[in-house]
Length: 346
Image 1: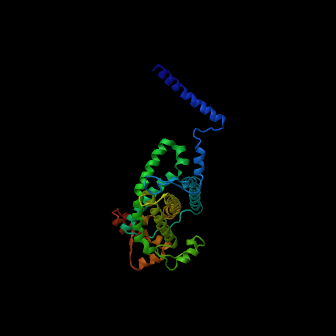
Image 2: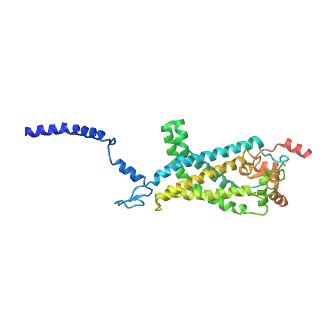
Image 3: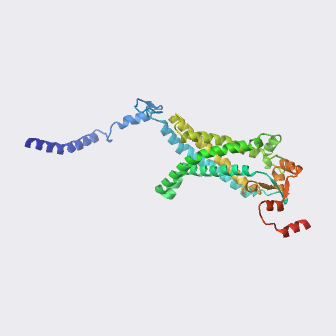
């Protein structure tokens, strides 16, 4: 019994010494890694196809041991997608600033007329603002996830970025499906006004009035606004469908479909964000009187004659214009009688 106790003690002491001797032997043999099998797995990962095996787990791609496309997607996201998004958004921002600095705000020709006409109904404005608010939320959270590591981590640190990224991801996934619903409402409501009509090609050839000083005639929407509408609808549908595939991976889609959906989703979103920047600029700082149509539903007659003369003429022929005083009463605002008398005497 005493002999067994001594043998056990020697074995206990000799075991770690043998381990150190083995490690020392590995160093002498030029093996500097704890697991020599690392080289084997590195060779496996460098294959250009997925390695399939056998697994007791029965699900999509469960037999794939290592998915090499995952590394390819990571490199694409960091090396291509982030660069593409950065360059695109910087160029668009620069062009808009250049337009504002060189050309200034496009004002209403001849000033306001004092008469307004209804352009958008309450339902149309609610549908527009619902889609706009949801889109802005998704754009901000999406860009936060895309640019978070190179931009936000240096500014806020890892802990705060982790909180922002987690909230952005959950909010993005939750609100995303609502974007599709609001997009369909806008599609159904505005589709008849965005079909190609006679005169649209002439608007395009004249660059929407940017080339030369001649006025370009148009109907309710010009070709530029129609182009924005169809970009919104088509890109929005691509973003929505690919987003549903990413958020709900229970349709049987595998890794390759998920990765492709992620690429399509990101590229389409960046394109739509870039084009929407131009739309927002023209509707606010770029053009006087445009935003009023979506705020109150009414626009000034002079604005309509400047940008949509055919539609303005149709409204005048049908006697659909009202005075600014009538419009103020409809909005529940007090009418300045002194200015009204001055206008009548003038």
